[in-house]
Image (tube, rainbow, N blue to C red; front, side, top):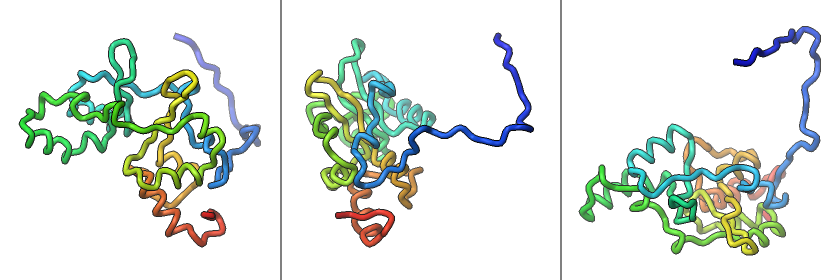
Length: 197
């Protein structure tokens, strides 16, 4: 075990600040609200994890989406807390499945059914354009794909945008891109702090 050194704060008067303070607005580059998997590891789950157990794991980890991968870390799809809702379980049970036998793969959204934003287009976009392009998206996350490397490069979360723009939206619940767009379009349309063009 390592020993830590403690010092008094009696003579400490200043704080350390970031060299560039983040002040993000609608016209900031979209990459400012992007989670890049080159900098932050993706949250992964195997397809064989029981769906009810996965829902509990995600709640405990305060994670609303995981990327489903096989044993070789090949991308299979995504699963979110919306996909693991009680309503989703009821639909599967009505279709003849047994609740305790449902797996992540049974409730995930397969990669064949997903659309993602091109990383190259994200690099030349701003936050407002990203939100506008996702105004019909009823989910909280959108994947970002690097077409040069043919890989999932990262994601954008509507809740991250809410936090970074400091919007008056409760992030303890899931916020879809559609809801985010509606709030900005209606609640902040005349705001001097946030303007929608």
